[in-house]
Structures are given as structure tokens and as C-alpha cells.
Image 1 (cartoon, helix red, strand yellow):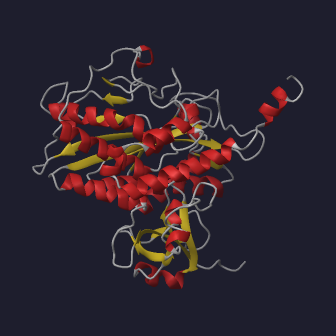
Image 2 (cartoon, rainbow, N blue to C red; image 1 turned 60 degrees about the vertical axis):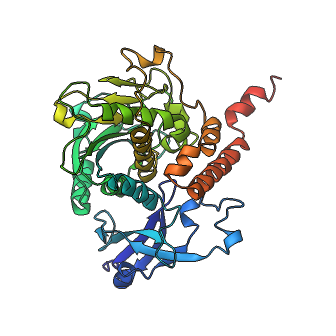
Image 3 (tube, rainbow, N blue to C red; image 1 turned 30 degrees about the vertical axis):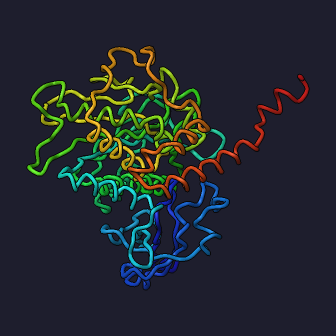
Length: 427
């Protein structure tokens, strides 16, 4: 059999977290790394169905012009699960004069991170990512639901070995793998680091690796937040602290409670949480996960060592005092997720207000203000948020809300088999 040709894939991460780009012979690698690749400026705002957003100011009104596709500092990455000497080049989009794209999610995160850097603060961030391994076909589940069952992990040793090898090749600091609460559900934590862009890069690359390795082994990997109504949903939890210019954790005041700065940041995160839910839960299926007594939060609240709260302050050494944000599903775009969390931090640092009292016990029964209960409400609250427009940028907020409304409308105009079966002959 002939050796397959070496190929490169150059792509940008769109607003839904989908990679969009081009497949090219490896001979084009130096040109791509040199910034010669071009794609339409509107590409990051294509909806989840692969269609332009109707009436978008980025398409017909502007002539749908091309823009620059610039390689990130990660360069070319080896795709060990692909045939041949495959390489992947992540790119970001910029206007002809080099101005970062207002709708490129990585550039949006970079802009928010720069605002914190200007205050002498560095976020130290890490993510925990849950996913399901499924069989293609009518019986998709891979195993019994057994929390932390080492036998479930052992049953997929070859898969995890390939994932860890690919993570090492990508420079992703992958930590422990565990069996989660759903059948065939697993979690791998990524270690923390003082660079939010690198943390988000690692998360989006990790999803690509897990999906690629699974497919190469005859499986499918799903980051759908609620693929099975009767089993656990998949979340994307974020842990973070803030370092000052001296390298000290500003959330640490030597106490178990943490500093006033920690509480100010908690308050900022809570104040933006309803409006930012559309980023944390961006799809129709996302809201099936955010249900009471499911280990996914429904209330806008916080607590110490409380996994029923939207924001948890873990225990341990005061030097490691941090915030865990537990709302996002595994379908959230990591760049936008970290961007909106850092926006909440900025909001809190500016307002310097104390949050409501921390929740003790079951947060589902604490009478807390609630997150948007459905996709339509989340779209409305996001679109109306002046704070998000200020912390992120107005063009992104306009385009993202319009894209989600278009996706919502498409689902709303579809009838399910269940709806037909219920009403066809009974009313």
C-alpha cells in the first residue's frame, strides 16, 4: 500500500467551538505559518448548521471580504491519530492592518486577558472536561455507570494511552482520568497554568484529540451536555485564582474564607451569570443538563466546598485558594467561557461589593435567584446585557445573539416524533 501523503489542516475555532478551515499538502506549511492563508472574515460566526447568519453585518453588507489567518504561538501540531504525517495549524483571524477580529473567540479572550494584565493581575486557570465514549449504532452505551470505577477506565486503556500521547505531543498538561457517573462517561483534568489563552487552547485541542482518537478506534466521543436524559450530564468546570505582580495569590489572606478580593470576584461572576448563561450553555441541549438535583447548578449562588452551588470555593491550603465555576456544559466554547469568567472578575474588581451569604447545604432548596431556564430566555438576557457588551465587544455580542436566535428558530420549526405521536389522533 502506498504511504499516504503528509497533509496539514489549518483552521480557526468558531463561536460554537467548531474548527473551520482548509486541508492542504504539507508543502504549504511554511506559507501557512508565514500568515499567507486567507478566509472570509465571517467564518467564525457560521452557525452550528454551517450556515451564515441571516442579515449579519459581516456577510453581504460588507461584501463578505477575506481577512488574514495568522498562526498562533502553538505553531504546527502533530495529529498522531491521522494517517500519514498529519499536522494541525490553529489560526486566528485579523483584518488587513493586523487588527484582531472582533468575532474570533481566541481574540476575544485575549482582549479580556489584556485588561487584567493592565491591572497587574494574571489568571491561573485550569479546566475539568467530561465526555462520553459511545459506540456508533443503536446500542451506544459503553459501560455500566460506576463513579470512579477503575475497571471502566481499564476497559479503554488503548484509548487513554493514545489520548495521553497526543496530549503530550500537543503540549497539553493532561492529569488524571476517571470514570464518571454516566455509563461510558469519563473526565480528564487539565493542569493549571498562568496563561488563560494556553488554558483555552488546551481545552479546545483536547476535545479535538479525544474525538479524533475515538474515531480512529471505532468509537465516538461526545461532549454533548446531556446525551441521555436518565444519566449524568457532561460539564466543563473551571478553576482559577489571580496572581499579582509579585506572584502572590490575591484570593489568599491566610484564612479559610479567603480574601475580600475573592468575594468581590465572586460577586462579579454572580452579577453577570444570568446574562452570560448563553455562553455557558450555548445550545438547545444545554438546558437539559441544568436541572435540580443533577450536580449541575440551577441557582445563582456560591458556597464553600459546596458542589450544589454554581460557584464553589474549594478547601485546602490558603495559598491555593481559588474559585471553581461549575455552570458550563462540555459544549461551551472554552475561549468564550474563560472570556466571560474574566469579564465577571473585572466586574467584581470594579464594583468591590460583597456577595450574598454563601449557601450551606442543598443549593437547589435555598431559594436562590435562578439561571435562565431555557435557551430562549438565555438569548434574550444575553442580548440585553450592557455589561457584556462593555467587557467583551458590541459586535461580538450582536453577532453571537443573532446566531443563537437563528439556531433556536431552526429547532423551533421542527416537529418531533413524540409531538406527532401525542397529538395526531388524540385531539
